Image (cartoon, rainbow, N blue to C red; front, side, top):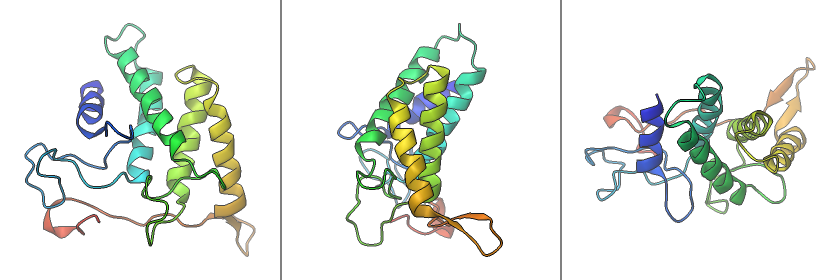
Amino acid sequence: LVQQILLIDEHTRDEKTGLLFHAWDESKQQRWCNPATGCSQYFWGRGVGWFVMALVDVLDHLPQEQAHRQDLIAILDRTARALVRVQDEGTGLWYQILDLPDRKGNYLEASASAMFVYAFAKGARAGYLSQDFLFSARRGYHGLLQNLIKIDAQGLLTPEKVFGASGLGGNQYPYGS
């Protein structure tokens, strides 16, 4: 698992933004990948959300003496810093395609925003991240409550604008654009 996290960081991190592309094809043959890098075209919020949530959870179970523990903490920190840079100023939320807030059809996405709030709050509480990340976590949490959580007719909390599904594997899935 540690090696997988290191490979994801090595092959999908964008040098310019610090964000992680949604996918990487080592063979560089998939129709969705950049033929030079093997990376997909976009930074999908939910993909990065699953990654940072997994990181904070893995770190909880990784022995202190594990050789790459500090590398994983550094990956979490770099990724969290990149995410703060694309956090929406007005709402504290994140877009489905993280770096393209003005793209037609893109929207503030509830599940990715919740994943980042979780990772930032847990990471700061556990000492993997600086306490400064609690500010971004609180902004995201309040943004979710104010903008993307509704109370339905039965009084239950219901998240809105949750991305349904997408895929990049073979011809059975959409192109991913």
